[in-house]
Image (cartoon, rainbow, N blue to C red; front, side, top):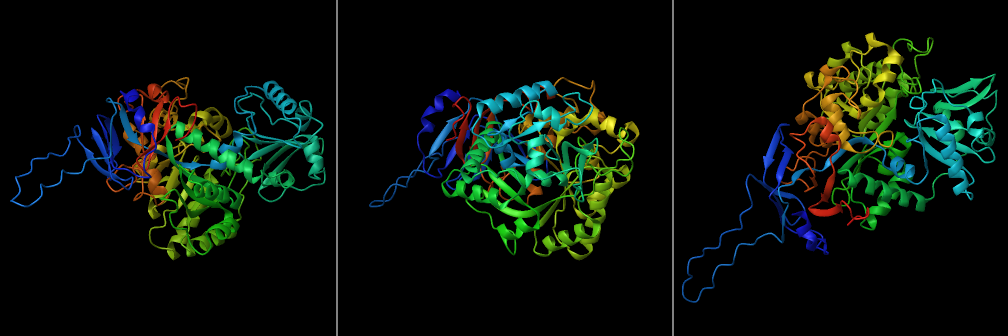
Length: 567
């Protein structure tokens, strides 16, 4: 019984050899196939020593009688601790291949509209938040989604003024690709009817004036005057983000778009021994890459908890704000094809600048035009920069079917988020029409084309919980079981492939496969004890999986029901 191990909550050495016995162990081997085991041995460096097929057996001690005057042989050294897990399922710690750590943390300490179902509900929540936080000079938040509200259009500044009109309000859309400002915020930023949108951005207009929503790079017009979080706020946000991640079994995450302020918060946390989640960091643009890492990727720091190994670039926007760059017009907005956010030559120059110093390049591409462009660029870069580059395409949501085979040609990784499909399928159909969706959210096609497929959540755009992601990858259905049979069911993947995407492949995507991800002997002992056998459960049941314990480096860091406290 798990309740019988309370004694292990006592302080332990930094690392201690141990054994987790009597488990239904499920891991992914080096070949991507399921591995079963009954016990996990941990060495005194916090790494996996051995996976045991059956139960753990104490080392036998049957010494021969020593010669006269000689000492008896020492008893074989056993583990420092032993946990009988009572048959619970043990799986590797799950890895989110694409998330935003500080974005998650800041969403937990600012106004969050992700649970609102209508404009009126959002207005009420904004109004209540302002009344509860009267000392704030600005109201800042995230999470609104006009599609969820059934609005059929973007909200306006006047509608935000109706909730809060006396101080500036700035609220980012759930995907981070549009922002909603009230009139006070627009005035504070000096934006007027004559303000031009920057390249790669769009200002929504009404009656010749800014209507209140700013898309992609036009967001900078407002954000330049929005107060930045103080270091203490970032530290608080990071701690809350870690709690949220560990509670759902995320032991490692690729942080897509790390700023110098984010990196400093990561370092401060690690310096005081509080950084538990492993962070594979990708700099937000060249300036942050050079400022943080300098002439080359950093080494792994803090016992493999932190490394900056790459750069994140934004090539286009998102479907929800019609910023995704398409080859043809949006079906529901004739004349609009989205926004290429980096000119072609500049994209190649940035990629080359990063690659020459051996930084990995990860490029956000959602629309079919954006994906075609990045595949063209990778083809050109690969003529100059050979070797194991692991070019990454983040999201890869809408692909021209003719481009699908191109992903595998240069070892390009498709970094995709299964929960996006279950959130987006209705909207994607409206935005593009059925005929243009043959290569949409095409997970099985990626695998069939031998493309490395890493899974994540894009948190805080979606929940960081990976179990709905595994379920979505297997079923192509949302939490309500819709649509019946799954949307484009030919793109479903197996449980084995889904788990692989959240473990081994997610680590591989970040050059971390020798460090963690698969419970291979020699890797870090990062694992979960969960409340059900997800290998035999239906996708519906997998969605409800509860993490009982999260272990990192062979140490327990989270226990369900412990008031959210980390150990």
